[in-house]
Image 1 (cartoon, helix red, strand yellow):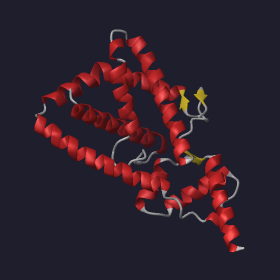
Image 2: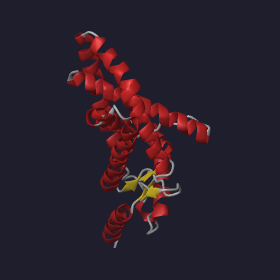
Image 3: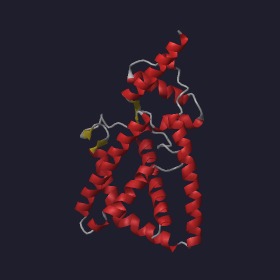
Length: 230
C-alpha cells in the first residue's frame, strides 16, 4: 500500500473511534455528543493507535494472546503520552480516569486498556484484511482525489479546532481565583456561552480540568492587569 492508502486507513479508524466514543456516550449519558477535539467525525488518537498496531504488531498475529497484550501496552503508552502532552500544551486535563479502578495518574485505566487489547486483535485479524483489500482495489485516481480532499479538510479542521482550544482570552480575568476547580468551571462557562464550536468542545469534554499551570498563567495576567489599573 502507498502513503495515500495509509492516510485513508488512518481516517477510517479515526472515524470508527469517533463512533465508539459516540455510542459509549449515548449508552452512559443517553445523549448524542460529538466527541473529540476536532470538528469532523473522527478521533485521531484511534487512527494513530490503529496504524501503530498495524506497523508494529503484525508480526505477533500468530499468537492472539501476545497480540492482545502488546496492543494493550502500545495503546496505553499512546494514550498516556497524548494525555500528558496535551496537558502540557493546553494546560488542561481533558480526560481523567481517577474515579476508575486500576488507573495510572488518571491518564489510563484497566477498562480502557482492555478495550484497546480487544480492538488490536480485531484490527489485525478482521479489519485490516478487509480495509486494505478494499483500498487497494480502488482506482488510483480516486484514491488520490480522496486523499487530497480529506487531507485538506483535516488540516483546516485541525487549524480551526486548535484555534478554538487556545482562544480563551475572553475569560473575565477579574474572576480568576486560585482554585483549579473554579477556573475549570469558568472556562467551561466561557465555552458554553461562546460560539457553537466552542460549545461543542465543552460538551465533548464535560469533565475537563485545567492544570495548576493554567491557573498560574492567568493569575499572572490578572496581576499585570491590576498593576496597569493602579
